[in-house]
Image (cartoon, rainbow, N blue to C red; front, top):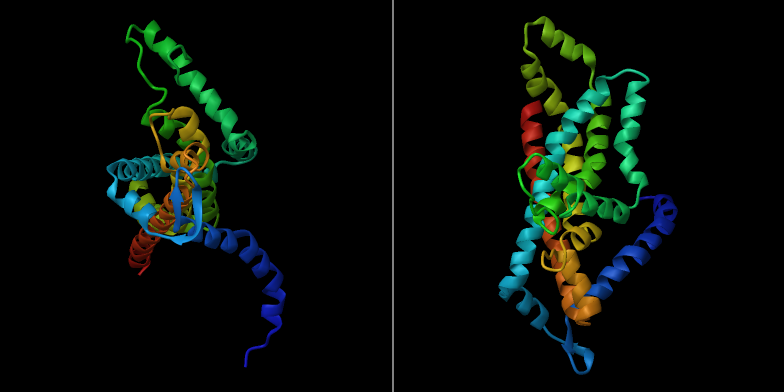
Length: 282
């Protein structure tokens, strides 16, 4: 018989977890099945699948979900292509440049997301610095604000530290003598990175990708400020359903669908990458 002491020690944390996470999710799930009428509001005690039927049969909602995961996937890919090499360079730097670059990477986390979004809106606007530079070069003004490109640029800026830090942590466990041994056997730098470094930092890339994708898919401030009223993403739709339409059951259904879809994508990606990682390491 197992000793109850570990469970007793874990009980406060489990109770806090259940109170702050599980209970609100269950209440949201119940709300998503409640009936709704625009004249009377939420119908307590009346349960229906109308919200989910409307959600999965309306091309408007399906298009928003597609846009959300497309933007989140593109953001994750760019963060991976930029963040992994940046972390590799960071791990190879000596003092004090390593500390300085690490501070530069973490500095965006010290500024509010809303402030950063407003900063990007000033840069990407019709009269922003980027368009002024294009006009000075004779290339003409380009519409950047309130586009998917603006949302992706700002999300990459916000999410990049969440990719760099896990990869950098994985690189700290890498033994430099293995790279030196490969170099002594006439392996090219590309081969060393592909056959030695990349397989061992794959857990860090996986962790960073999952964090970036999850946060990007559920982001609200940046799509709301840089996407505008026409470029909707799932988080902004949930906001509209709750506060503009006052259709709380529909908003709850959209939010739960985003959660489930996010989990499916992330778990599938996790399993795919883990299989390749185990195959690479034998």
